[in-house]
Length: 399
Image 1 (cartoon, rainbow, N blue to C red):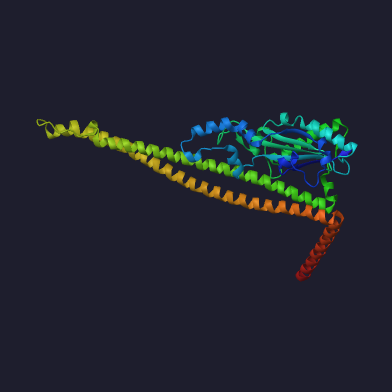
Image 2: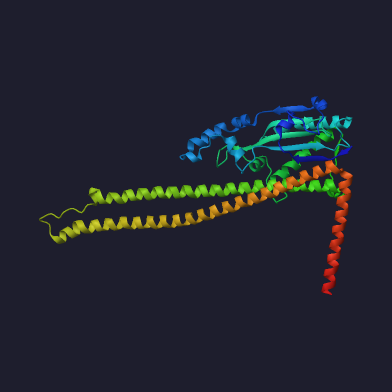
């Protein structure tokens, strides 16, 4: 028996996954067959994971605007990280592993065995909601988790980060297609395939045969992959933005340090006005002018020159460093703004692609697969004919 493996990015509707409400594609009479592994409050999970780190972070802050009252709200309302992520795993499809058949029960057994070792295998992905559904057409598994890292050098020492959490588990990003996420998904597919093999199911890898899928399913799959790539791109841009912000913070801290040194120098300069050792004593009435010059004036001038040289050296050092840091700070702010604009653009593209995917599903539900296949096939044929016609005209003009 050969079956495919599907791993999709879920929307993270915990209420739907736990069946607090039912969608149109669920059969409530079969919901008692579902398996629920955990269903914790995400707010409580955040308290358990990050409260101690949050206290340590806030104790170090000297400015009120850098104190974080609630870490979950900061992540939820921010744009740098998602509060949690969801994956959906499925074996086969509604034709070969239907939930109402023996093969459906076999899929349930395999997914259940896979799930029971998921958390042990992924220590940096804190699972708080996981459900295996048997009340839809094909058995599938929803896993919701919070990715986190410890011993971070910036922000909270324990904080949310998908990219760094996967890196901590050994997945190092390479090319645009070989991201940490793609490497991890590939590894999880392999883990699921091992469990399938124990139950007599071989992993059917579609590979290049995917081009022979129906036009509708192939187009839907391409849209889903584009959405996933954009989400990964957003994660990468957000990490880059965080790095840029860290550079801004480091530069600002150095400028603050230099300003404190400038204050200390000013204090030292002020003491030359009042300190007794820096006041020129009155000449003794019996002392000659030459004696006064050699014993008092010349040593004083020599001492004064030494101090002036030191002050000039420190001033030039401060001036050069402040100039350099100011330039770097300006460039860092500009890079940060540019990255934020890019993230906004990618998020807009992502929203458009998600809407396109929903439109495909809506069209399919209204007209049916066969009708859509026919329309798309004719449209692609017309497009190919027009393309050939344009190429022919262009060739004739060149002749």
